[in-house]
Image 1 (cartoon, rainbow, N blue to C red):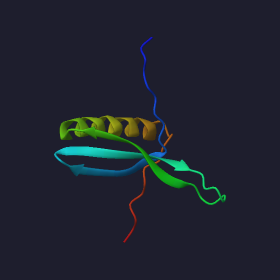
Image 2 (cartoon, rainbow, N blue to C red):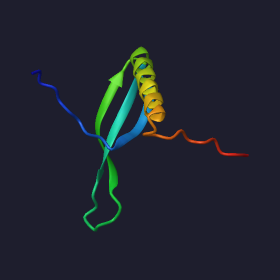
Image 3 (tube, rainbow, N blue to C red):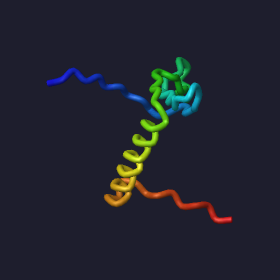
Image 4 (tube, helix red, strand yellow):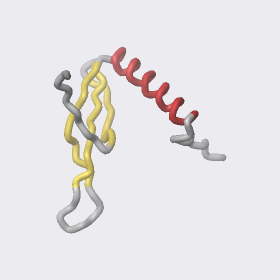
Length: 81
């Protein structure tokens, strides 16, 4: 068995392009001491070249399509004007 590291994130706080690289800032929701709504806190950054980003995006889009087909997700409806 290989030693794989698992990282949990509640979501992506920010995606930006700088220095020729795409940067994903992942975040987790941290509870407030006073019981208020959890606040997002950046916990890890993944940096990849644009081609790697495009490959990852295409893989995610294929998975989204499969989840929609399996009715696990619903596509957002475009707002009517």
